Length: 218
Ligand SMILES: NC(=O)c1ccc[n+]([C@@H]2O[C@H](COP(=O)([O-])OP(=O)(O)OC[C@H]3O[C@@H](n4cnc5c(N)ncnc54)[C@H](OP(=O)(O)O)[C@@H]3O)[C@@H](O)[C@H]2O)c1
Image (cartoon, rainbow, N blue to C red):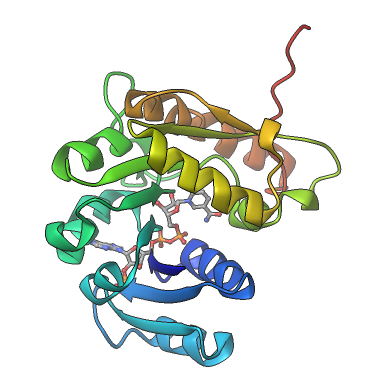
């Protein structure tokens, strides 16, 4: 499958590398068509990898990962181009973190709205699915790094888009019952609200290689 990965940070690179290793064709997108990190990744990742602007990547991909800085995500998708996103599934991994007052960051949107919803409202003809934002990127693409079952959450309005995301998650190694579909995109509020506790657990344990496991009574 042809996939766009918007973002040249550690999440973009980790997701893009995993997708290439699975046989997908991946174009990494950036604010500029000549981003150095993207060029270095293409050199490393080989023939199925390419890079360009956010717009180049979005027009190439049948499906789009948003791995951009939360405070720049709307802008990044505007640069990707509304027409290039039309009818496509956008897997939104971004978090609305506000570092302007130092550490730990707060959320710049939450409680009654979310970044996932902001993106869906701004691009109503795309299908935004919030996923994978609640863990570090190594675990996103290799859930078996952890010695137990654990969970990732989904939120999105379109059942077909969520099915596509589940198929990719299975390729990453997620078991069916480790993917918890919370419902429509308003549930991105829940997914994003996990960040303040995630950051504090990380601060207390100095170990980012963990995830959440939901344990329910039978
Ligand atoms: N790090 C993790 O393990 C982790 C885990 C869960 C979720 N997340 C979320 O995943 C996202 C990516 O995280 P990251 O650490 O890989 O990278 P990041 O530094 O948060 O984001 C890098 C990307 O954002 C773009 N960007 C920055 N400012 C922008 C702006 N004003 N307008 C448009 N685009 C802008 C950059 O564009 P250029 O390419 O042009 O520089 C780059 O592609 C974030 O939202 C983060 O909260 C991260």
